[in-house]
Image (tube, rainbow, N blue to C red; front, side, top):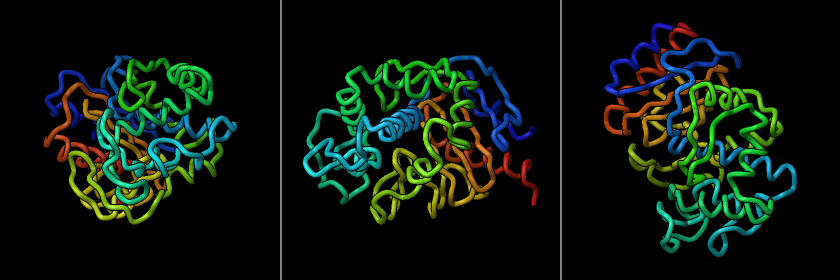
Length: 271
């Protein structure tokens, strides 16, 4: 795909990008096996592990977890009231504001670890990474600590196009707005009212501008990370785009990412 060559202009020392169409790899550009930090794209894998845990009965999405009044569902949806970084007290009541929170994912992973009676990294390995054949590994935080290759991320993306670890109904629930109507700030992009989010999955819905561009459907979901990484899935188009890079997120990405996404969809689904 000609669109993928755009990444050579991003100023990153290393970048790898790939596209799935109909669940199969349509094309890639860059080193598919090079290991990159996934940064906050890690949250998608952590969220999927929680969904697996819910389906197998290890946790319940509506059981208490986190600050008083919060549940697993609140933590997944960044609606628990916890602040961005760990260590501080809640800054809102659960279900009142959408506060993007690494702290919430730390609490979430600790909760799963307690219920599963094993370290969260081990549970993630057993529940998600190994079954999907990923060589990725969690090195640190369940909010941003996964490291893996483009091939790993594309295998993970395929799971989000056609799930095998959880039911289609569970994935549909996770990619539907949780706690509708909450306003909040999407880091790096600004305030949205509402800031729609699923159970760990950021939802495009009516956000404009959006980091996936304007050709993706409102049903598009995914996540991006500070290290120049992103993954989005457009279920309406049955297309996914995955990118790993080693250039820190900044203003460059707000232009480059939508332009790439729009060019990918233009090639695959010309008007």
